[in-house]
Amino acid sequence: MLMLIFFVACSDDNTVTEEPTPIDPVEEPVKTATEVLEGIQGVSDIKEAKDANKNDIVTFYFEQPIDHTNPAAGTFKQYCVLHYKGPNEVTVLHTQGYSTGEPDKIKQPGLTTNLNGNYLEVEHRYYKHSAINKNADYYDPNYWTYNTAAQSTADLHDVVTALKNTGCFKGKWVSTGVSKNGILTALYAYYYPNEMDVYVPFCASASISSRSAARAPSCRSACGRFWAKWPLTKSCAQR
Image (cartoon, rainbow, N blue to C red; front, side):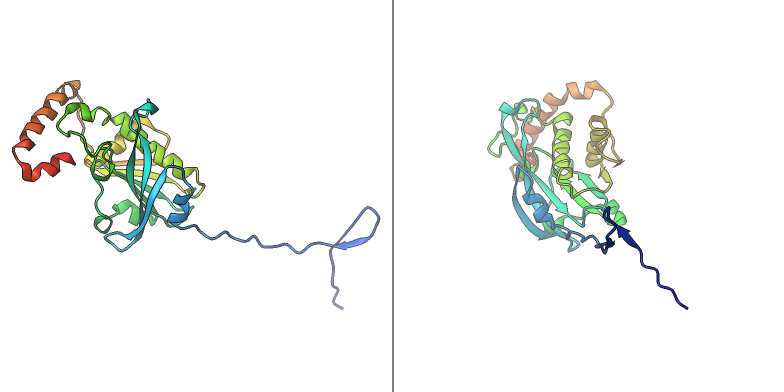
């Protein structure tokens, strides 16, 4: 004889009640990159595009203080690129030491493709789309006052913090770059050692003497005089 056993629960008054049927949790749909960015204060001009490998990306601007220690100095808009796959994926931050290319020229670093993760690129302050004053005299050494390691890494910190606060980037974070981009990754690790899970700078050569820094103003002045003699390449100096 087969016996069927029913599990029941009894209330305090000895009446019999059936156990409720468990309900499977409903997974929320993954937001698009545009939806993620639209909820961040300071983000503007969001545009969808394709990169060099036909990946879906979005470009956007993030409002930054010119001087992170003095809000009264004003703000500028920093150009950024995001390729978003989901909230639990690894996010690779490419610390750009120069200008960011047009969307269809952007090639994501090998770490992004190897990890199959999200990709974030932040154009360096003062370059191309992210110039703090597009009408400035680029040959005036005073213009470059806020182009420092502390200021540029604070830019990265602000962008990363804003994205993390959305709750849409729960996976590990990796920062990487090659050459001057790699130097910025190393500097980022110095100023914000706990912000990334891993820092991977490649070919990140850097000055180790204060003598180099002391010569910076005269070097910028000499470069300005050089570029002034070559008007066809003036745009290179401006970038």
